[in-house]
Amino acid sequence: MTAKTAAQMVAEARAAIENLTPDQVEAELAHGALLIDVREDGECAQCAIPGALHIVRGMLEFRADPASPMHQPGLDPNRRVILHCASGGRSALCAVTLRQLGYTRVAHLDGGMQAWLAAGKPTTKS
Image (cartoon, rainbow, N blue to C red; front, side, top):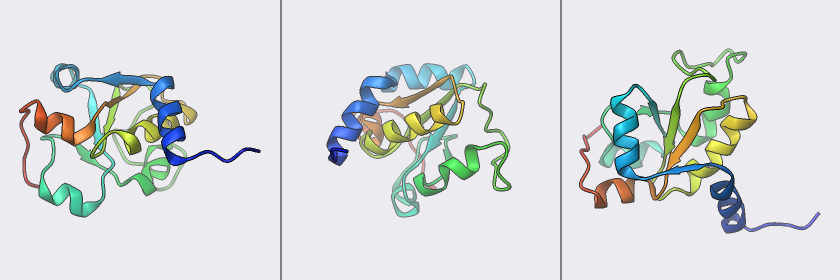
């Protein structure tokens, strides 16, 4: 097996998933989509997207799997789920992971929190 770099893995993930702009994410949130912030606690403490559910990347599989004893109520493979991180790399990888868990309506915020802030979208302190 040939090893891949993290950048290659992120590029492959982005090519395989739905990449949304901040405007598209904002519109989807207005129609009931669930936004999951996969950043670390310290990142979220600085600012967050209002209404986002915080699940650190390392716990996503356990929180998203309905068969897991750590399943997070509200996470449903049939619900529209959008992921975000700081710049879009971790959330792209997480979107692929959720698809492997059977989530069919998953996307991510391309550019992450950086793109959200650059677009002047609302934030809150966690």
